[in-house]
Amino acid sequence: MAWLILFTLTILICGNVINAHLVHKREFTRQRTYWQLRQQLIMNEKRMSLGGKLTLNSIESMANQVLMSFKSREIHDGFSNNTTFLPSRNFLEVISEIEKSEVFKILREMPKGAVLHAHESAIVSVDYKLNNVSYRENLYMCDRNNSLKLKFFNNPDETCDWQLLSEVRQDLQQAEAINDRIRQSLTMITENPRSAYPTVDKAWKKFSSIFNFMHSWLSYRPVFEDVYYHILQEFYEDNVMYAEIRSTLTSLYDFDRVYGPLEMAGILKNITDRFVRDHPDFLGVKIIYAPSRSVSETKLDEYLKTLMQLTELYPNFVIGFDLVGQEDKGEPLIKFADKLNAVSTKIKFFFHAGETNWNGLSTDLNLLDALLLNTKRIGHGYALTKHPLLWNVVQQKGIAVEICPISNQILSLVEDMRNHPATTLFASGSPIVISSDDPGLWGVKGLSYDFYEAFMGLMSATSDLRSLKQLAMNSLIYSSMNDQEKNDALVLWQDKWDVFVNKLADLFHNDNRWQRLFHPSLYHQYT
Ligand SMILES: *[C@@H]1O[C@H](CO)[C@@H](O)[C@H](O)[C@H]1NC(C)=O
Ligand SMILES: *[C@@H]1O[C@H](CO)[C@@H](O)[C@H](O)[C@H]1NC(C)=O
Ligand SMILES: *[C@@H]1O[C@H](CO)[C@@H](O)[C@H](O)[C@H]1NC(C)=O
Ligand SMILES: *[C@@H]1O[C@H](CO)[C@@H](O)[C@H](O)[C@H]1NC(C)=O
Ligand SMILES: *[C@@H]1O[C@H](CO)[C@@H](O)[C@H](O)[C@H]1NC(C)=O
Ligand SMILES: [Zn+2]
Image 1: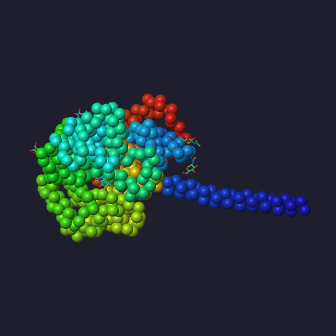
Image 2 (image 1 turned 180 degrees about the vertical axis):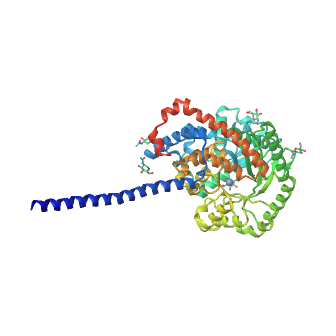
Image 3 (image 1 turned 60 degrees about the vertical axis):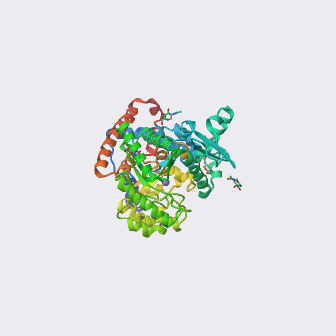
């Protein structure tokens, strides 16, 4: 009996052991496959994302560790208390907090390449307009119907009760009050932006009123020239080395005459040349003629005629055409499709398209017409990911989408940057550039603020220096420089980049501020 029990037990135990061993092995294989697969998917996603195929050299890797320890700290803080996460909040309320961010400070130093989407009349800082331009001689003000107007005169006309601004400012209290009003008339900044601009239309109403307010005094030729020079100065100081700027080329005035689009382009060219002479490591500007989109077909004919003259007079300076203004309210491209198509072999287009939340309406379909008209880039393309087929064409043809995150938020397309559709463009490695659209109207200058929002809010927490490097290179690659210019630009940019990463990598060894912040576990969680 005893041997039988022993025998059975042995069988049972051995069987179990053998069984357990088999199960364990299968389990182990399955688990190993799971973890390997998981790792593989993560790697593949990273490689697919913007910049994912770049490899960093040893200096860049050190620089990257410094950058990513700052980034991961900020993301971690936001993750544990979302009220502190800046890209989730309205830009107008967090400007000064962004300026304190270590990531932002690094982005300001970074050579960012080019700005490819910005509007000439909306770039310069409020500071320059208020503290410099508005203190010039011969500037008059008129306050009628609670609406402030400024204009330069030799002798003021009769259309309003004009007062010399310098005289109004003699009284200190009045000076303070008028300066407040000028500042308010120049920016979207307001107490509670989300309730002030609850819809796209409300935001655009204020936005358009700012352009109206600015035109009468900033289109005074001497001021225009200084402002434009200062625009380039502000970009240059923000480590931008080249720009493609859209201008409506409306008109300028002097005390004795008016200047039209052709002369305006000439002025822009001359000032650009002067700026480049003064700053040889700034590579210049090209202009995209971009007048208002809410016009008749007759007006469009005039535009196209002007454009032909411009490109003839200033080849390689005026490079193409666009239409501007609120897309939902202006004319859709389809209205002008035949006329535009007729000139599309002679003219390069850089259309704003799909700057809308409306899916399937005419504005949304501007994307379709822009592509059919062979647009070189797409301004905003906010709606692009809703059109997988068109998006595919954009990727195949290498048409860069000009993403302006802050503009989209302030003009009420998106509240929280983490929900911006460009997150998907970043993840899929689509051709994109980051730009600043109208920084002067948000109360800031340059390009770094948009880079901050993109790096912290639109990209993955794990996107690193490689994505930033790709963005900077994209801005040159997708520019309209010719091959020689592009080559020179990339060489100069590389020099600046090397200086930048060297400086950042130095912190890796020498900066205890960074070392204090460096937490290996956080760093590994987010890289
Ligand atoms: C989150 O951050 C805000 C602002 O810094 C602070 O007032 C609040 O107490 C924090 N909440 C928690 C749960 O830490
Ligand atoms: C995050 O935000 C949501 C609403 O936006 C809020 O309900 C939640 O309490 C917040 N969590 C933290 C940790 O602040
Ligand atoms: C205004 O700016 C110009 C250069 O654009 C400079 O020469 C001038 O001194 C400035 N004036 C004031 C009052 O800041
Ligand atoms: C002032 O506003 C009133 C009502 O809004 C309007 O009727 C009037 O024409 C305006 N006056 C001027 C001079 O713009
Ligand atoms: C630009 O500069 C050129 C050469 O100095 C000059 O002939 C031309 O008149 C200038 N154009 C304008 C519009 O000022
Ligand atoms: Zn724009």
